[in-house]
Each structure stands twice: as C-alpha cells, then as structure tokens.
Image 1 (cartoon, rainbow, N blue to C red):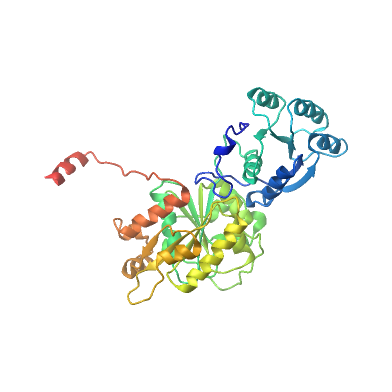
Image 2: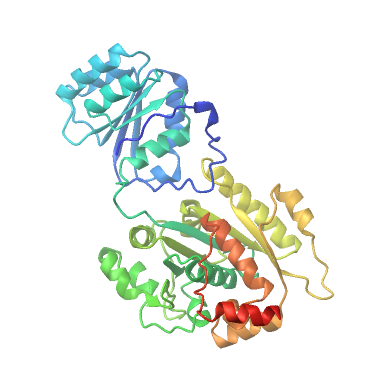
Length: 422
C-alpha cells in the first residue's frame, strides 16, 4: 500500500524523540539512489543512510533532481529504490513519464515535493510512484519511507528486538531480562523468545529450568544453515508464549565472533517472533556493540554505585549518539536498599545521565535466591509481590503495550465477591 503524504509537517515529532509505538522494520539488502535538488534534502538522505535500519542498504546521493536521474539511467540499470526531489508540479509528471521509459521493472520510486495536493498525489499513484513525501523532510521521514516499501501490510509484523545489558557484572541484568520476558509473554500475551548471548556462562536455561540439547551455539557456528525451520528446532518451549534460545554454558571451546556473527539469527527471529529479548553479556566487543545498536529498545541495568553510574553514562551516551533517530536507551536500578551499604540515590543517577530510571528494584535476597535455586520466575514464587508488578511495568514500557491479559473469570466469581464483601 502506498502511504499518503504527511499533511501537517509541523505536527510530526522530532526525529530525536520518535513516539513510543513508532516501530520501523529494518530494510533488506537493497540499493537506493537519491537525486536531490537542495542541500538540505541531500543532508537528510545522507543522515538516513547512517541509520541502523538502513545498515544493509547501499545508498548513493547525487544532485540534479529529475533531470539528473533521467540522464543517469539512459545507459545504466536502475536500483531497487529511486528517491527524486522536485520543486514543481508539472515538471514532476512530465519527468516521471520520461523516467518510465528508462526505468527497469520492479524499481520503486519515492518522490519528495513541495506541493501538498490530492490531485497530484493521485496522478503520482497512477504513474506507479510508491511514496510521496512533502518537504522539507528529515532523516526519519526518509528511513520510514524506504523501510515501509519492503513491509507488506498483509504480512506478519516484523519482530521487535529488546536488548538488556548490565552496566557492570553482577548487577542482575540476566535475571531482569528473564523476568521481563516472562511478563511480556504471560501478562501481555505476546509470543516472545529469549536469546541468551552469554554462550560460556549464560543462566537462562537454569532460570527457566530448561536443559535443551541444542541452542544458540548451533546456529552461530553454522550460519549457512540458519533459517526459520532450523531456528525453530533449536528453540526450547518454556510456556505457551515464551521460548528460549539457550546458551550451552560450556567451556569446551572459545566464543570469539565477528561483528556480524549473530545477524542471520536476529533476522530470522524477527521474521518469526513478535518479540525477541536479548540477554547481552557484560563485555565490550564488536558483536555486543552491534547487537545493542541494532536493537529497537535497550534497557541498561545498574546497581546504585559509582562504577555502575560511570558505565551507565558511557553506554547511554554512546548508544544515544549512534542511534540519533531512535528512542533513547532506558535504564533501571537493581538491588536497591542493601543493608549498611552506601548507595547513590536515584536522583543523582538521573542528574548525571539526564534521564530518569524507569524502575528501582529493591534488594530481596530471599525472594530472588529462592527463584534462582528453583528455576522459577519471581511471578511464580510470589505473584502478588511488588517486584512482580515492577517487572510488568518494565515490560509494558519496553513493548509500548499498556494493556495486560485479564485473568479468566469463574462462574463462582460473583458469589465469591459477595462473600468477601460480607
């Protein structure tokens, strides 16, 4: 479906603060060529090319607009996507007619114009234009337009990747990742998968009381076999809505990977699962950095101490700079209130990072210890505990979903309610 031009440019949110539910699926490996008439549009397209969602696309920018495009394709094949900027109305229609004579079948055209007119839009659609944007445009407008060209409306929505990482070792990031994923699956009724990326020491199998024979290592060491069917065989089912891609947690081999080692796995999971929670180990390498930058939402887990504050600030600033068109990373404080331990207050964290924590999880050693030793989630140990509600709130914030799955009511519920009232 062709998206209609934006009617009120001034009412659109800034590129640096996209709305919570503005989920844009990444574009596949395609070639894009832009022919701009203004420096401002060229800069916006250049900035869009640096966005993570166009990381696989090959983008080339030229000046000259419609005339330059027609001349360029007289003797050269056309790319997957052509972006054309035009200032007028009549010249764009005449130019598109000329371009059609030299354009290859299957090429998609995005027009950036200044005229906000329904009649013009209909003429563009009739000529096969895929999208029409009203200038001036920003980088996020270009990213959204290109990505939407390859997201069929009737197709299943592309999955959202949530990356959870600890600011330092021992802050409980894995525990939070597993409990948040449990809340997403159980309370939000969203099919989810937990990918344990700590291949040597991962604890997801222990926390979910699973011991699968296969897991994520089988996929990362056999990239040529990775597809939906292969990944499905590796998944271990935890609940009706939650699956696990477990880490081997063995030391019989070293786990040194290239930057793009997990790309095929993540792309396959996106195509088959609405929600993917990445349990990212506390280490800094090419692939962990790539996994964090490529995620749709990021949660940093910190404890209330100076080292966590410094590391959270560093991670937060790097990811915010590397993802200018995405939501800023989120962070939470864990293990708050350890007896006799000096702690940095949440207000001090917020002042240093210039962002409020989305949650402060209290130090509950008996509760968390019992859950870990039994291979259970906090909600299974104590469904009514305040920490269970905190995990649900974090899950809602990360997924952008505010409604929870309502429990099934029994036919005895009215009678029980009356008895409780008495």
